[in-house]
Amino acid sequence: MAQRVLSSLMVASPFDGPLLGGRYRLGPRLGRGSQGEIFLARDDKAKGSDPAEVIVKRLTPRGTWKSFELFEREAKVLSQLRHAGIPRYLATLEEPPGTFNLVMQRAPGEDLRELTKRRRLSQLELKDVLIRGLEILDYLHTRTPAIVHRDIKPSNLVRAPDGRISLVDFGGVLDAARDKGGSTVVGTFGYMAPEQLHGQVTPATDLYALGATIVSLAGGIEPEDVPRKGLRMDLVRHLPALDRTLRAALTEMTDPDPDKRPQRARDVVALLAKSQPPAELDARSTALARAPGSSALANRQMFADIPEPMGTLLRFGVLSFGFGGWVAMAGVRLSLTITIGVLAFLVFPAKAVRKRVVGVGQELDTMLTEGQGGFTDLMRGAMARRR
Image 1 (cartoon, helix red, strand yellow):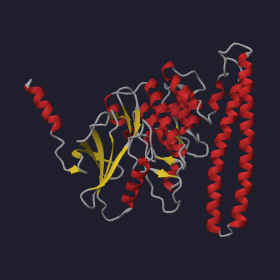
Image 2 (cartoon, helix red, strand yellow; image 1 turned 90 degrees about the vertical axis):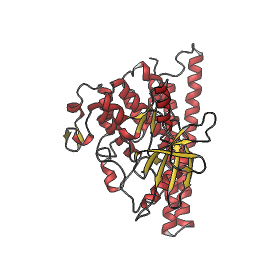
Image 3 (cartoon, helix red, strand yellow; image 1 turned 30 degrees about the vertical axis):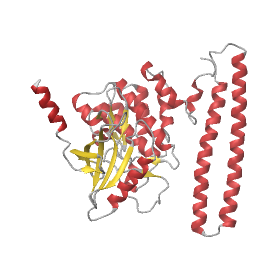
Image 4 (spheres, one colour; image 1 turned 30 degrees about the horizontal axis):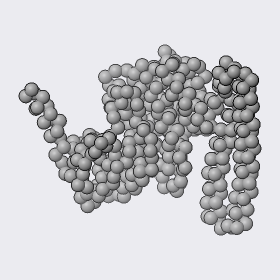
């Protein structure tokens, strides 16, 4: 009994730091992130389902304000995100003056770097981590504008006891709407895609980092130590016992040429779906693969379990809807192209304004292309053969 009381006191005692915002009691320092120090803290006003323990990232800018810019961007982006795999933003506090504190939800579990120090993950677990990571990236990359994390690695992926994955440390986050000039190289050597060294970042950059992370977890060594053929990782030599479909997907994800890499998380799911996934992963991978814009939608005939002729009538209805939607999207894209052209070259002759108008048009066209692709996959699903 005395030992339990002592243990309880030892657990409670670390939260003896300053009280921030009259609510968050600072506890032990957990380490350093890409920007600032990371602390565990206790929410003294937590109620109901609110987390009792939170994470506080503290930054005291010294010498340069670039770190503060990244810190501020992280807080802004996190405050706009709502996903179970991303820590929830709670508050930003300047306390004491000159010290900035970002308070966020604590991700349950432990990071994969620490977890794999004790044991190697099975192939089933590796595929589960990959698919859950792709779900998070699909959410980030389909925001408008797209959000790129830029620093995915084992220590930034936290796995809960029930298998849930959280992506943490958004200190290097980048949204695609920012100015292109003067970019800062953010990332971790070995997990960074080659184009990051030149400040070029796209959603495919995150897919490279996630692929390199799975390669590292599967082989137990850092990506830079993996055998190579030229610039490409030689995964056949490095991971000969790995499931061939998973290995092929990782090979595509870690292609050094960003144009040859999958461009979307859903493209990777389509690669994984080329062979029958394990039952434990089927529902999760199928849900993501069938999201709008995924070519994996056509892998199975729609309404296959509906008696005929009702199944055929339903498929015909879906086919008609998909064709009508595709044509409508094509018309909108054509109208948009003409409108943007007129605005850019006749209404706004100034080069800077014209460039901005064209950029907006390209973003809108990309969104419409995604929608058109969704209608295409809908038609493919309606026309797919029975399996």
